[in-house]
Amino acid sequence: MRFQTPLVPAVLIRRYNRFLADIRLEDGQVTRAHCPNPGSMMGLKDPDLRIWVEPNDDPKKKLRYGWRLVELPGGHWAGIDTGLPNRIVAEALDARAIPELSAFPVITPEVSYGQNSRVDFLLSGGDLPDTYVEVKNVTLRRAGDWAEFPDSVTTRGAKHLVELSEMVAQGHRAVMLYLLQRSDCTRLKMAGDLDPAYARAFDAARAAGVEMICYGTDISPDGIRIGDKIPVDIAAQI
View 1 (cartoon, helix red, strand yellow):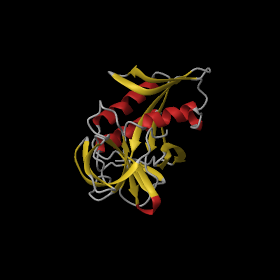
View 2 (cartoon, helix red, strand yellow):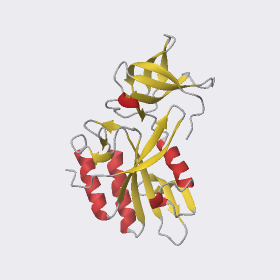
View 3 (cartoon, one colour):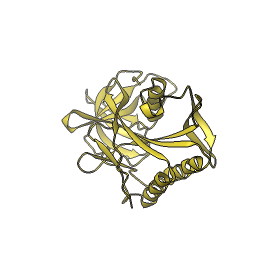
View 4 (tube, one colour):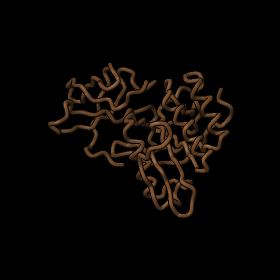
């Protein structure tokens, strides 16, 4: 997934609500950018962080910049746009770049299932069981090389785990795919202290047969694409 417009560097002044941030461009201009992430963004919203934003000249948009990346120590990156993971995974599925999900001839996004929900991808065909794939964006790191999910309470996320479990009970295959949008982590675990209910739902879904997989991403100011598989800690989470 390549960015449509070359990104430019900036410094974060503050992210002051879920969708807005004040930034300082390299020429000293202070302006406002769209923040495409309604989550807590723990560790990725501190003042004075070096960030990368995407300019636009669309007259229909109120803001001329969209925040896309955070530059991390050691040459690492984090992608903060929660609208990108499904696009990244869609490209990877089309390219057969996720081995566990590469055998399906039909890839259908946004299919209704469960209780008034839509699964991110339904994979079908080839005499294989229908496979329901839900994608979650991961950006939290608190210690060592551990990535963690979620970074705040997510009732909706727990609901998705229950619904995937129901698909398994009906004879289908279900996969929770965690997409790690930062390059300084090599393994994933659930943040049970931040959302105990989600951790319990994770344990229950795994026991019910939902597959838990995680893939990293290769991130640069040019774009983001699927990276290497990341091990998931499947020990009891709570």
